Amino acid sequence: MGELKVVAWKRYGQDRLYVNLSDGTAVAWADRRTGKVTILQEPYRREALRLLRARLTRSAKPATAASPNPPLHRQEAPPVPKLPPLTPAHDLALNRPGESLREKLEAEGPTLSQRLINWLLRRPSELDSYRKGLTGELRVGAELQRLSHHGWRVLHSIELPRKVDIDHLLIGPGGVFCINTKRHLGKAVWVGDEMARVNHGKPQPYGRKSKAEADRVQTVLERHVGFPVRVEPVLVFVGVTRLEKAPTQLAVRVYREREVSALGPLSGVLSPEQIDTVYAVARHRCVWLTT
Image 1 (spheres, rainbow, N blue to C red):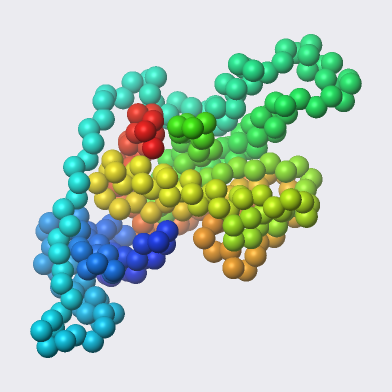
Image 2 (image 1 turned 30 degrees about the vertical axis):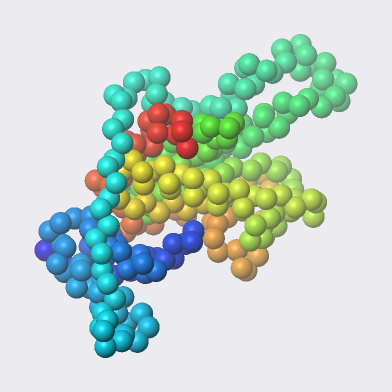
């Protein structure tokens, strides 16, 4: 039996203790607020409970004579929803970077002659932002694809209800990352805890929206895989001349497009089996239709 290690994890309003194997695979976890424990792998139950009880006892208030130890309750995992067979029509692994924007441009975009007239007359089009966004997603998608040689999987343009989509979802040894691409060619960007400014302009809720998207993705994945999945938000800026981040900005990873390779060496969060499980769920369009 492999050596077990207890790791504290506090994020997105959760306060948990994970019991992991040496390779980062979680075998159990406890909610520090309620004392409830979820056992993920039965062979490790006794040792995991012993380690969690010790940690919860140390962090709890002084025990009374009537209650020497904090209660530990096993929390039964809810049943994992069964997905229909995966068909090409529902396989998000077939999506190219910027797939959603391509479809919008094809359905709503002007013809070649109309684009030429708009360009000659310097007349902006409401679809210009789609084209800029597509360029950004293509560049970031190419950078993410390089990580596939190191055990990472990537999905693009995951459509959610209410006209929202996830630009890229990266799944691998270092965990799951929900990536939002922003293209600001030739601009300077400052990123704060919740808001960002482009060339000292009006604040944009980039950080807040990225965290909300990551929370949404985490809820969907955990519902379908049957074990805890930490999803981290990432903002990637394309074409900027300067990128600054507030010292207090720790909740969202912020990169230029060439810097996303920094995610490649991360490891110890998901085992190869867990990567396969998360990817198999995430690539299925059906899981995202009712989020």
